[in-house]
Length: 364
Image 1 (tube, one colour):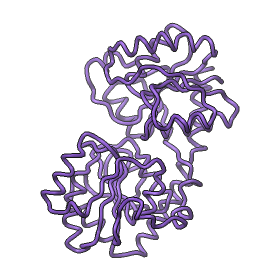
Image 2 (tube, rainbow, N blue to C red):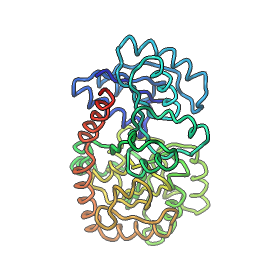
Image 3 (cartoon, rainbow, N blue to C red):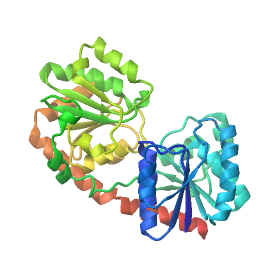
Image 4 (spheres, helix red, strand yellow):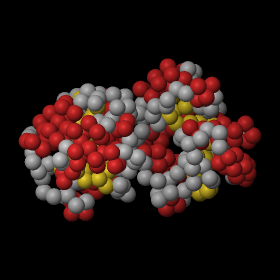
């Protein structure tokens, strides 16, 4: 097959990791893979994997934008030139672009829904979902059916998958603990890897840190991610008089180094499609705490592979995290169970095989 992925950018993030994993997997299976995007800091990773890059000006969030028209004109020629059979889109604007391209080229169009959309009128009226929609979790599938009335036969759940060999406890043991690389001091480290957005729940974790530090005065929070809430979160830490205990890192090109610095990983999201960073932490054998919402429920069995707490509950977060910091044996047990669960159910090989099945259904 000749496959074209379309993304807005190739910067560090869940969608880029997802597309890179698919690209490597399909190339290993003997398919030809192209990526159309505005580019980004992880472009070299795609080029090293022998993915052919097509630069387009798609860095927009507007569904009606000149950027979509310019991208369409360039890709229309490329699709015919390279005999593209599958177009796979990964955001709202790239769905609109792929929809237009399918109409003109006859290539098969598939989209992946990576999370939850606001059910705006234009989006409901002009879905542009494609012949098939991949939902990354059962909760996302329900969202598509209930909020957008997507036909059930169109939607297939294919859970995100990760390289469980790359994210392994053995690797973390080898490099633990490179805290000096992040400016960490001695003491327990609570970690989060997520963009700084209100939906990710950083506010509740920072408030929980205020409570945790009362029992564990040397505890630190390592926050990896960039976003529009950065200053607001820093101000909150200052107001709570705990700014010295919280370290904001804009990004980590290799998240394993950040995970190796952590004792407990936390995902306090208000909504979550599945949670790639959470999966990586679990695969690495870390004890995890997550909100009882969305796809996080799919990953964490409360008390078995992690701890679930109510969303927006700082006291609940503080209690769960503190309990783990006090009990190294329980941390180890939960981390081991989490690793086994991810390895059995969320490998990248399984994701690639199931995605290929969706492609072949479209090709008939």
